Every structure is written in structure tokens, then in C-alpha cells.
Amino acid sequence: MNEQGKSQGQKLFDELKYESKNGWDVITDEEKRQVFNFNEAYKDFLDKGKTERECIQEIIKLAQDQGFKSLEEVRKSKKGLNRGDKIYVVNKAKAIILAVIGEKGLKEGVNIVGAHLDAPRLDLKQNPVYEDSGMVLLKTHYYGGIKKYQWTTLPLAIHGVVVKSDGTSVNIVIGEDKDDPIFCITDLLPHLAQEQMEKKMKEGITGEGLNVLFGSIPFQDDKVKEKIKLNILKLLNEKYGMKEEDFVSAELEVVPAFKARDVGLDRSMIGGYGQDDRVCSYTALRAILELDIPQKTAVCLLVDKEEIGSMGNTGMQSKFFENVLAEMCELTTGQYNDLILRKTLSNSKCLSADVGAAVDPNYEGVQDKKNAPYFNKGIVITKYTGARGKAGASDAHAEFVGEIRRLFNRNNIVWQTGELGKVDQGGGGTIAQFVANLGIDVVDCGVALLSMHAPLEIASKLDVYMAYKGYYAFFTA
Ligand code: MN
Ligand code: MN
Image 1 (cartoon, rainbow, N blue to C red):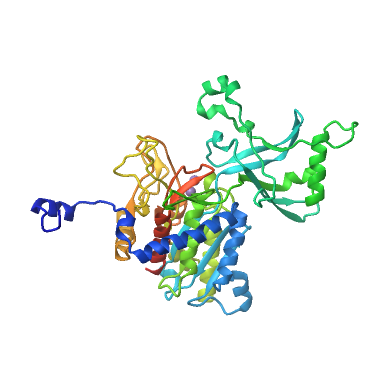
Image 2 (spheres, protein in one colour):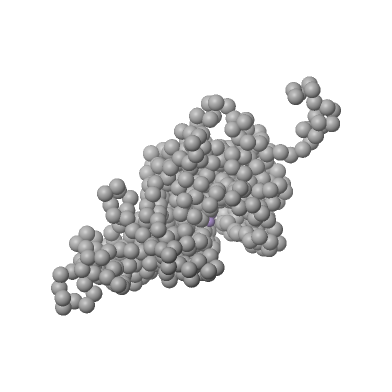
């Protein structure tokens, strides 16, 4: 029926009701092309950054290409920070702040988009190498919330850094080049899995059972007890100049060895590792890289350790953000005054850019379908997170959510509201609560994923693009 054919009641209902839209129905053909183009670069970012350290290296490159300078460089130039200046500050190779100085002074507040670069994975233990049953394996300790069974029988790569006894460090990446070997955690054949299959899913594979298959050729010397281990240590020594004790001061992450790919015959989705939360990190990054001179200073805050509670001096609970903001206050005003920093914080606004859980037809019943995000319905505004009665949530103020809603509507951004699962089903948190502790207005706002925290997470390309567009609009508001 056309618009004229509608009854009066129907017209009134259309006018009054809230209904989120499928973005593909409302965007222009030109914008559809932009969606696909944007996601090509996003896939590339996912492939280049499989650890937080690698992400930082890639981000620095992209930022420098756009004229961003390190804060040290700015300090050395003795010119202070002025409108239009683009800067970045790296925290211990694992977290980064990028900023574009706006027209207004810092104490009017800054616009922050905050996301995290760490992702669930398996970390090698500090004494990982052992020989058993004619094989060498590596012991791991998982990082973040994983379903352990998902990590067996997958092609795995090892990425990270080893700090050797003389203090020098060596980067290791094995399993990404097509000629590289890969690694694997084995699983039991179904024929002998009768007992395993009776277990609860969370007990079927144990944390101590996540050992990575690493080698099987013995060193030719019958006098040696652990010949296969010796051969592996010899190879590590030849290739990386390392000894076994060097693992103690190493950070080696076991991650999926595959690259990000298009998903679906229509290529509407992306499957890849680490999209929680590199999808929001990358979209926020692109938004800040493309800024000219915003009204308020724009800050892209990409932190580490969110998956384990935002702890540590690279996580959101650290002073990194405040310290950098303090320095920015000094460099923009020519003097340091704590009150200016406090004013800056309490006048600032933040989108906590993290992923949500999209409705999955394979897993009915865990979401309230009226309040859950869907693929292709755009960037998700999540007023609160938490679990069991919003515990652990910062719960954004209606006024701030209203501001963001108006901003998105004004800028033709496809958006939806969504919470993480049914009441009492479970839950989770983000960096929002720690940002809120600083007095900053903050709301969670990001991309909904399928199979969140799995080795292969899936996102809708349209939603990825809308996140970028949403963050850009927020920076330029
Ligand atoms: Mn996350
Ligand atoms: Mn997560």
C-alpha cells in the first residue's frame, strides 16, 4: 500500500513508534560503495595487528602519514600545542592516545572515543616448553574470556616479543606467511571421546590442556634425555638467538593464523580474529585521522587490558589518560594548573567504543529481541552494561544519550539501541565505568558482533562503516 492508501491510525502509528531500520534499505548507492571500500582497509588492519603491540605499530604508521607528531617531538619544538595540531602518545608499546587540538580551549572539554586493542588469546607461560610422548609442546595461560574448546584444531600463529638476558629484544611472528609453519592444539578423536563428551562444555577442554604442538624431531645424541626439546631449543637459538630462560621475560601470544575474510555470498560481513575491539579501535582511528580542525579537541584513546578488567599501567584504570591530558593542558596554555585539568575532565564527553552481541538465530532465547542489536541496523548505543541488575555499569545519563541520538539522526547515521543479553542471562563491562569515574559523560557505542570472543568473530560491513561515521560525527560535533 502506498502512503496515500494508509489509514489514519496507521499513519499516526508510523509517526509515533520507534523502529530501527536495516541500513541497506536507507543508504545511497554511493554510500554502499563506501561501505565496501572502508572494509577493505579494515581487513588489512586486522591482518597487520594481531596483538596490541602490532596494532600500535600500524597505528603510528597510519597517524604519521596523516601528519600526526609524537608529543615528545612537540615538546622538543618548544612551540606548545596549537589549534589543528595532531599528536600521538604511546604508552609502553601497548596503548596510544591520538588527539587533534580544536578551536576551543581544553577546559571546555574534549570529545573522546575510547576503545581497546587487546583481544582474547592464549599467552605462552613463562616456562612453556616441555617434551612428552615424543613431542614438544608449549604451555599456555589464556587471556580474557574464551570458550576453550574453540581453540582446538585451529591453525595458530605465535606473535610477540622476547626480552633476552642482555636486555635486547627480538620480535617473533610465526605462522602468518604462507611458507611459515603453523601450530595447533589437538583434540580427542570422537572414537575415544566417550568420557569427554559426557562432560560439561566448560570442562571438556581444560585450561591446562591448552598446550600447543610445537615439534617432534629429536636431536641426534643418545646421551641427551630430552632430545626433541633440545632440537627445538637449538632452532630457537639459531633463529632468534634466545635461550630457554628468555621465555621468562617474553610476551608471546598464540592467535589464529588465518586472515580476515569476507563472509556471505553477498560479501556483506567480515570474519576475522580480534574484532572485539579492533573494530571500534580502527573505526575511531580512521575518524580522528580524517579530522581537520574540530571545535573541541578530539581524542582517540586506545587502551590495553580491557579483557582482563582494565588493570595494569596500560589499562583504562591506569593514569595514562589523565597524565597525557595534563601534559596537553600545559602545552596548550603554557602552564600547568591542576584545576584546568579537572575542568577539562568534567566537561569532557566520551563514546566508550566497544562491541555488542548481535542477535544470532542459532542461539534463540538469550536476548530480549526488543532491546538487542541486530546486524545491519547500524552503530549500537548501549546505555548500560553490567550484569544482575546493572551491577558494574556506568549507566549513561538520559541527557547524554539524547545528545548522541540527536547527533546521529542529524548526520544520517544508521543506529540502534541494544543491551547485552536478557536480564539475568549474564553480562559484561567495558572501559565506560572507568571513564565515568573521571567525571566524564560516557555511553557505550559500538559494533555488534556474532561469535564475540571466538577465534573467528563476525561483523556486518555496514555496521563497521556506521561506527566510523558515528565517531567522526562525534569528533566534529
Ligand atoms: Mn570489548
Ligand atoms: Mn571482550
